[in-house]
Length: 331
Image (tube, rainbow, N blue to C red):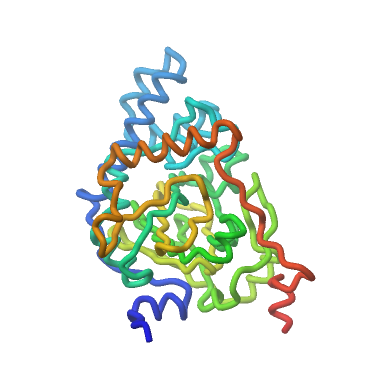
């Protein structure tokens, strides 16, 4: 019988685990914010009106991002996320991939936590996001329900994988706050033990976001507000149903969500990079540094250009609606 760690038992039982004091803000997180600010400076130099450019470059992080978000830059989130555009992949398609983010992805303390869930053979999944959420009152109307900049609807992380990945990927999400997260500034929300329902039917929501079908029915459950301090990480089971609240504070809520899958199971995002970050066999670890990581993304980009898209995933749909939330609750 395989040994199950206490952490894995909690994750499988509840669908989430909050792990305290894993990271250090100054050493682990602030360098990423610095690199994001560098990207903002580049965007200001490229897109800002000449009359406003010099002043904007002097703004602090938050004011600078608010300024950039009003420049009507197409797919702005792409510049702050390690991913290829879902559609229209081109040779000059840009993405956020800094040495500081590489250091976070391969951070020993994060991998130590992940190992307690997946075991020693761990791959880095290409399903990664950073989320810079301004106060909702500052958002353009079209961004209020955008999951990266505004509210995130009820969903399961396994739902954004390929059909093969939905069935076979053994994956865990590591959610990392860069700012203290509370109910007021838009923390995540989940429901205890609801992961035990397995993968549910989803529908396409705002701007193609995946949403649990009949998600209004989740209002009858007691919500678990996943508030967290800087330095904490929150683990989510791939079938955990979760969302995030609106940021009704006067400050930013910034986070990253990384994912890892157990070696031998698909990432669900082929041909995007899916590589060993920990293994008992050191020969398995062939991506050793930031430059090699970038090379993997460039290789993936070249594979995606001819077909013009990076990834597609079918919404989880099961025959006869047997995996509808509504039907499962009535049984």
